[in-house]
Image 1 (cartoon, rainbow, N blue to C red):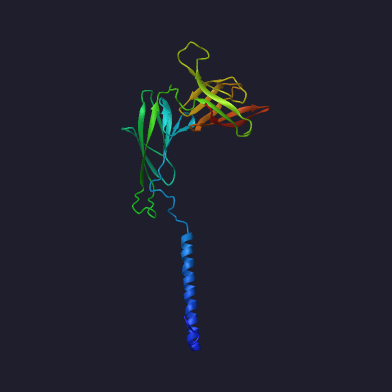
Image 2 (cartoon, one colour):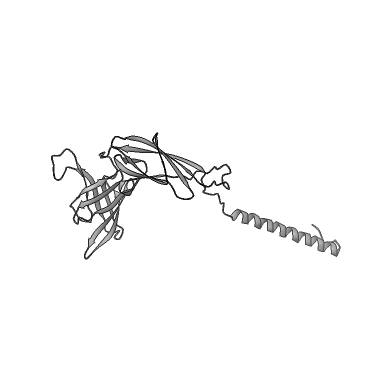
Length: 256
């Protein structure tokens, strides 16, 4: 805009208009930038956030497979959910966030487990949300003497308090130590604590977990052991470190 030949008052007005226009454009740009930098409250939100978990005996989490003939726990999430309805198989109906279920030794195969849970609707992110969520997962039950359980194997690792001091732990099935001619094998765990070659003999096995109550070199029980992934194990146990007994955790990776 040429302003050199304008009268002084007109020139001042033109400059003022130009300044106001520039200020308005700058303010608008700042507002747009501020709007873009604000976090989206709906980012990461799910229209159906419902989850459920299966837990075998000894507190062993399992995603989809378990032995029959044992007590299990089915559990839904806490808040924001307020009510829970379970349908296990075609006829068994329960209520409650956490329920106990026992399957007999004749129940095998795929068991559909449906959970219907209610919560306050999230209308801010999902205008059609009714607050009722449904999730169905399939639990596969196998015979409680099935030796294909992934908990069997050899694992190399270390205690959390001594990560460089590695050793191996083995969970396996073998002949009855008292009655070698018996056709029914027993389960064993060997290698806890480090250097012990005397197996735990009285142990319980779930599809992904183990608990040992007697045997080994110290006869101190292994409180809980379970697979954190199919090829990673965690064993929580007590060890005699003279003159005290301490709690230890072994973590290892499958090597066989």
